[in-house]
Image 1: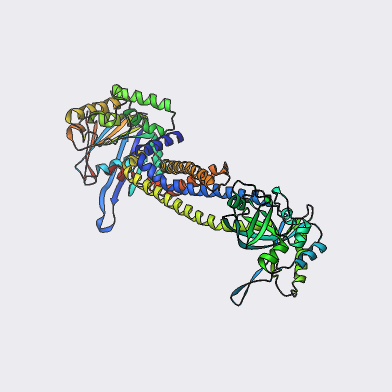
Image 2: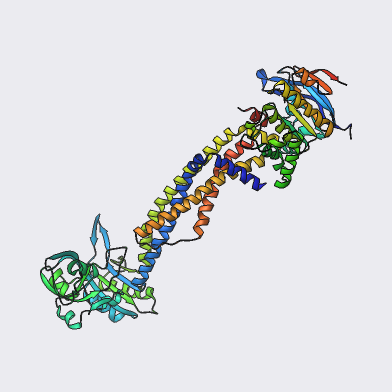
Length: 231
Length: 400
């Protein structure tokens, strides 16, 4: 199981627009990620790393090439089937947290479980456990506006992890945080990767953030230009 | 899942209460006018039905017809007493038959003065029309034959001329002819048509000689015996009258024989126009209400673009998103529907009091209100809901 391939991109390209205005965001990316890996995708803005992330998260489809998620051909799935894939197997962490302002931390973490059709009691229990795991046990009933940036991102991570996903995708998760919170968040990712065995793919342009990952992939102009493993 | 959807929808609606109420307003007005229309309509129909059955459904009213002659409307020649005698002799199943001729007159008692209608008839009139005496008596044979100056008066006339005083035995003047009041009619309290209590009845002969100055009979009232077919009696009378009036086989009837059912139909003809008008008002406000809901839902979709993007990223299907917004639209519109129902019941209660109509509450109108508003919510909510569901999650998440 340990070596099972979770994500496989085969010659994936992505073109936005048509004709003269066409933008080649990805120009043929091939990539395999195994269960339990912690991967950082790096690159300057416009290198295609966000596009790559959207395709990995089944939010977008490639223009050509193939994408297999746990051997499932994502390219030939309907939007609703991709929604189900996201629901049951993928967790997202965004740069701007994307928490619901009107809901408490607990309700925010419960949110994805609503789509799992779980009864309220179980939702609450799982959400509380997850909030405890990210160290927000005493912030459960706070609104996002009452939390610091680091705490908000912890809520977002709890929300992503509460469904016990196979793959956790984090798009510049520390982009809006100060350096101290950033490192705390990265420690949390590291811990989740080690303790829960969740596969993490992280997009960042910061060297010291990428350093937490075991494997680093550098994109430039829609191509992989460098790939390295860190001991 | 439905419970969650409801909770979220209620929270969204409660977040901007004023906006939600204003959004509902169109549906409130629409549903209120529909329900008011139905309630008042059934009240009015019930009242008329009651009155017509009070009048007797076996009553035939015969009057000379009107016809157009080269653009001029002409009254057909009136009947004569002879027509009645022939009908009475030849037609079976007549309980009573009464002639009637009327004229607007001024009646005077002492220093009081009242404009009313004087009708010349005979003592069968009361039976034919189901009218009763409150006190005194009707005309007797001699009074009718000799054309004596006696009269029966209705409650309105009594009130105007005598107030609380007993009118029996007093003498009133009609066209300066003194008439002795011998009977007082019971209150009838009719709400449609002319006031049936505003009458003075005198013997036909007296009327013809001293008031009208001719021997015309303008109406014939026939009360059909129980157990006889109204239509058969009608047909027989029609044939006799055609003969009496010397109409050729190709000529149309120049008289009308109506029964109570036709009266009811004539009445519903006038209410239909009113119903149509109110219905149009209701339809327009329901349409406007629906557009209002659609408008607010579109605003809401735009405001919540990021949230929709997040939900899509978390694995909500398009169906989940459609359901969310549709439920919200339907809650708004049914809320409007129920407020509208409340308003309608209040307004109809008031109107029924004002117009002395019976208040008819039909439980099924609750369903009607619910059904209409539910349908409006679904119909006008579908477009915004689909718009939300078809958002691109990536763009939605980036939306500021």
